[in-house]
Amino acid sequence: MQEQLLELQEKLQKTIVFITHDLNEAMFLGDRIAVMRDGRIVQIGTPEDILTDPANDYVEQFVQDVDRARVLTASNVMERPRPVVAETAGPRTALRQMRDAYMSATYVVGRDRKLVGIVTDRDAVKLVRKGETTLASILKPVPLAVDENEVLMNLFIPAVESPVPLAVTDADGRLVGVIPRVTLLAALGPGPGATGELTLPLMPMPQAEIDAVLDDGWTAEPATFPVVERGLERGEDATPSEEITR
Image (tube, rainbow, N blue to C red; front, side, top):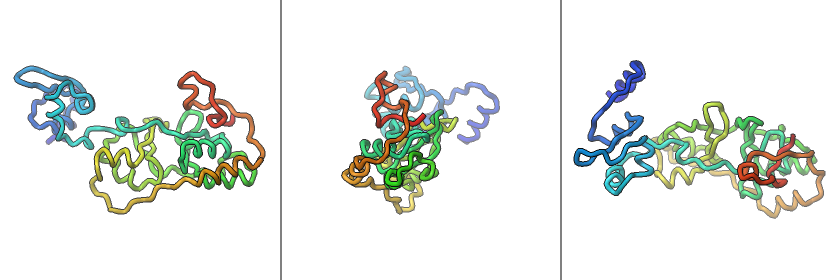
């Protein structure tokens, strides 16, 4: 019946006022929800607003048993993606960023921030040792990416199966965030339909080994220009580890 009501609303394009005592039902059906107490409205907002920012103790208690995995979306829990390098960057740049962030892999984006792949620290080390200056030969497909509007209940299995933090993209395929497995599972617990088999996360190389490669006098990469990461968002100059090749 709930799905039929949504289909009817989509077809008629009319506002429907639906009264229910089932808060999970309200969260599923409503674009905006009014919570009432003793005949008075105590809060109006989106399902996400009601869950994450209750107006008072009554609302907070009222929503405590709601299945958040069916309401909250990837955009509600995603984190800023770090590190991220441009596809025109070289292996040294990628390796420095992974080392500084204590990450074993980094997402690679185009000039329009569209997600194009990932590279690992081990592959980047091999290129540095060979003296190569582009990432093209080690660029790998993204294991999994999810839309920013996907509800959390659909993210458990992808998060468990991905060896890197889950990539979150917008409607145009641009990378807008990542969801580390621990962020999702620690907040909401194991998801439905899990197989019990975990894909082990990629482990970073020892930092001393990376430092030895970077400090071994290999030829520097071509000139670079600032990437939209930390520096440009705060109006600062990018550091060498935040630059990509023009």
